[in-house]
Image (cartoon, rainbow, N blue to C red; front, side, top):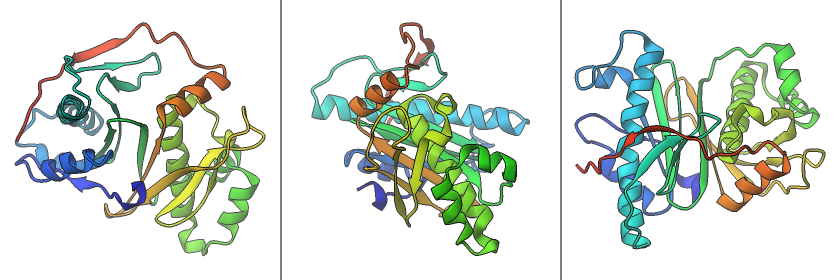
Length: 257
């Protein structure tokens, strides 16, 4: 179950990859990595954001290799794995789905063979201006925030943001999907999420958003939904574009430990 999955810390010496692969066989795997652990193993740039992207690229390619293994074993699917970006800049693969996020030296990645997935990570102390919060939140969510201990409100607002971003990324639209059209019903460690009744369609809040604070000082939210539902929502918002043009990230080597 999605709510049972927490990020697996992955290190350059191989620790964590086996657990990640085992989780993928149960249809979902989430990993996290820290820049400082990889400095001696990858030619990481001195600029933090660029280094995060370099590590993200490595993790993407490595994870697609595991997705390819699963496709070959369970679907008898013998294709050359590929990794590319669609017109929204979202990483895509032909052997499942994959998504990632990075912030302040941390990189998290989620992968699944049979679902659309999204993930987001933010520092739990990130200050989102009140004016901005009112712009992307809904009345129901602001009412919930008002019940939270003032000392915990910042983290709760960050959780709402990461939940909505993970959902929008799972749909495939990212920030092109207005966050006010997404409604979150909080819970711990998981809540419900979906399009609000006044949004583009009449969606039920039957999708699950799971969050974890296993990484000290950070909040990670993740969402898994069906491919058909993600496609249907993209169609309903009228924002789907011709995804015939892709930016190839490169061939994927099936690297095994």
